[in-house]
Image 1 (cartoon, rainbow, N blue to C red):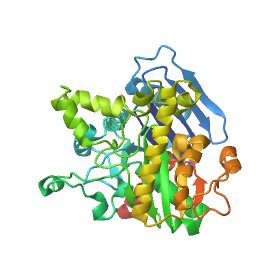
Image 2 (cartoon, helix red, strand yellow; image 1 turned 90 degrees about the vertical axis):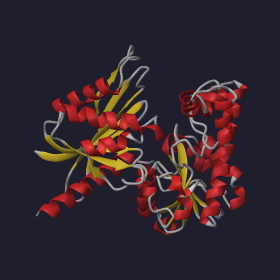
Image 3 (tube, rainbow, N blue to C red; image 1 turned 30 degrees about the horizontal axis):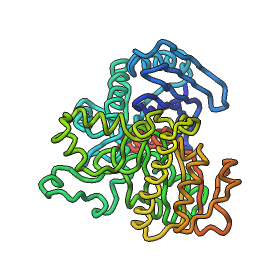
Image 4 (cartoon, helix red, strand yellow; image 1 turned 180 degrees about the horizontal axis):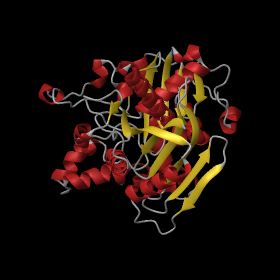
Length: 399
């Protein structure tokens, strides 16, 4: 029987997963898929590494289905169809590790208890990350589970980039800029070293643009600054999140408009961003298709926000050698890529319109001072690599 690990990325409305066999060359992807539309009309699609559809199902009346019963569905399918594989561990994306956890960790009750404390700092993700861990523990209590932290890649940022201008009594209690989407950026740094090792050693701006959006300034493949901070609410405008906002707005909403803390949280995390500005949708594809002028305004604000944040990170890098677009919007939306690059022409960015529209790997012109690439992210593979490495390390320690 082949030893294997499962990589699980449980988000607010989707669960992405991959099955990897273990071998001397590291984890090898053999199957994977996505369970999306949780809370509305859930659907699941699993494919083999060769592209064969292994499972496809949709629940048309599934608005009441939560993560737990859908995870049960996935678990039961795996138990039936993966009998040729011995699953020895499950690796999880955990969004927030706080100031104590940045390297992959074995999950136990004590760790879960500490990670629960960060649910208020990442309310769209952390509760679902931990719920998936607990559900698998309920189904297979002896199965090893590994937590891989989205904050980990940014842990080595310069101290000045992690500071908040708050009293030191709060800084000493862990109030700092953490940064997120770290598993994605770690994979991009790794992949860039394979594709363009010279650029990988330079000053690179990576843009993870999706329903959640952020940017990371990397020098030599190491994070030196990023747009998200204490929470995953900061930085770029997102699907339903505000991004950077004057904190005085929050004070005014509570003191003058009578908002409770819970109402403010819901407003900033779930009702703002593309959805709030457009009044149409949080999905960029729907906004492109809409004739509503507010949809166009939301797109323009998204681009403006991204270019503004990018400009700040270029300052942190003290120049720019490359831009990497990744994630749902970054990988698939040439209109947004072109609009952001046009606003960064001052930095020497020159886009090849044909390459951009056709979806080429390199979309900058030959005379561009800045190389612009599109690299698909793979957080599940990064989770699998961390899980495999931890298993190897523990086996080496035991021997």
